[in-house]
Length: 340
Image 1 (spheres, rainbow, N blue to C red):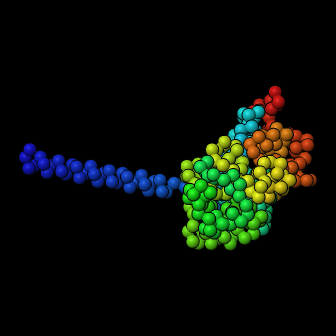
Image 2: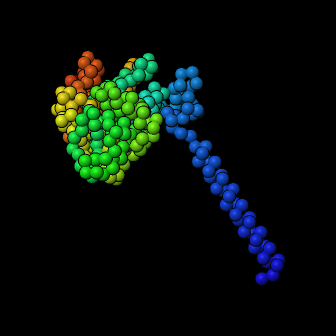
Image 3: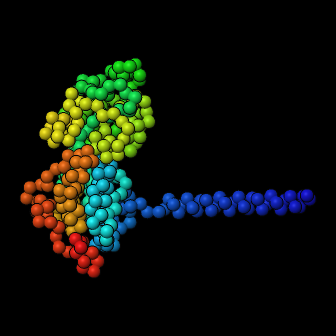
């Protein structure tokens, strides 16, 4: 090969490499500039800076969108599947977890029709004109990897785990503490029953004690895969997904539905829908009415949750009594009744 040919080859190689780099940079810029959903992007275009309401095109009347707490997702998806089974002309979209706060914000900004929360609304959120409709109660349990030798825990032992005073199980195997971020709804539920837990948990977080996890999926994967692991978790998530983990009794009480309903198992939280107080979407109202129906409440029980009654004197209680309102969402396209 001559010097001239070698020089031409190197030049072509350099040009090709430069083109690849430029193409890659352009692709990265394109991806980075893609807009996030309005309820996840503080600087999203189309958001009124004064009202913080998304200025979006009207959604189709047959579309229902829900998003929020990860604790609600498996049950909400099961309920949505049952809802559309007899209404195949409807579309129900349950987004991945954006947390309770994200669900509240998305509802306020009208990016979705129903927010999903696993805690009470904050006063500031109520002031935004939102209302929460609790529909299911779930036990919050101390769940463990299948290798853990114990099957129950006391209040003092719970505090010892998070305070670092207990580091090994009864068989000598090491304890792997799994904890969620401050403000997690399961930890809030434990704090109501064991007030000392709040300070112990805060100290564990400050001391970087245990493994930090930031969503329900990460928690369940760690519980399944980590020998000796233990952490607070939703009983319903374990039941509805048939997870291979151990659920520990608390103070001698098993976290079954009747115990949660009566309060003999004291650590629990309520799952709720969030809607605008004055102008709920008609399809959202129909879905919530369905959730309070006998069919849906049976599904809630089978999934490991305790169904709740609709708020007294609410439109949802009335809808459960008289059935869904007449209109396009209750009929197939073309006017055919849903029952036909």
